[in-house]
Image 1 (cartoon, rainbow, N blue to C red):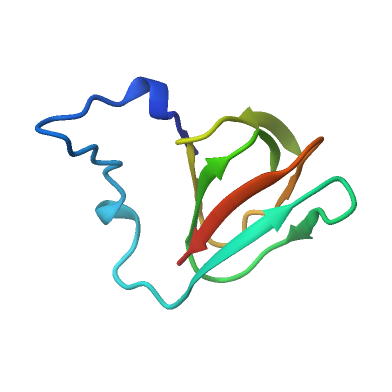
Image 2: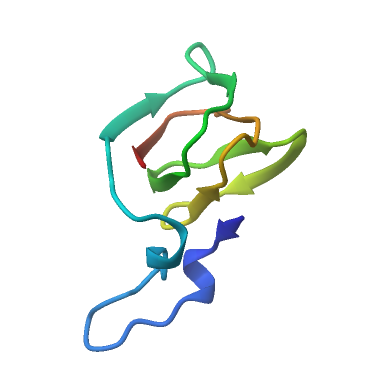
Length: 97
């Protein structure tokens, strides 16, 4: 699932992405810098994961379907969904789950 920043509304300077219903604890939080030479290859695992795009545009693959992402977009990845990310330029993003 993709949560588009453009679809969210801020209230009193706070934008809630509403992810609490998808996970019960965060085990890791990392930042990535993806370039055409350094894509994040497809893989899957047994826990939910969340990707938040900070800068640049990217192309996410979820179970074979591709979607373009912009800064502020979030990807919610369910367990065992094959996923990867590539960029035609430079993309900085956060992964947690």
